[in-house]
Image (cartoon, rainbow, N blue to C red):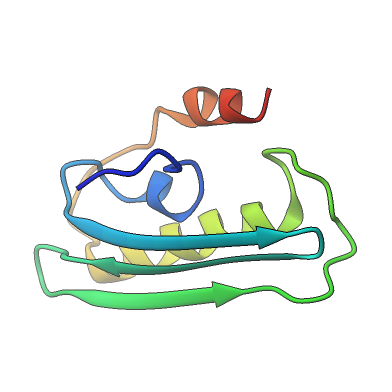
Length: 97
């Protein structure tokens, strides 16, 4: 399953992997909860920021960056032998233009 907003946590998970995601954002908060049906077992994670100093609506927003970093860290932890590289960052960056 795919959704339009794949530029945050989902961007760090291979697109062929089934995921379910719900994102949310207001000026000083970014959040996402994700269920990942990974090859070696499903996992769920949630990231919620609060009182962010960075309230911008750009790709480099601190909350959006954190979502991507945590998602990548978890994917690489649970699937260390799944060799996939995210080559889509420019595509997702354009969603903010």
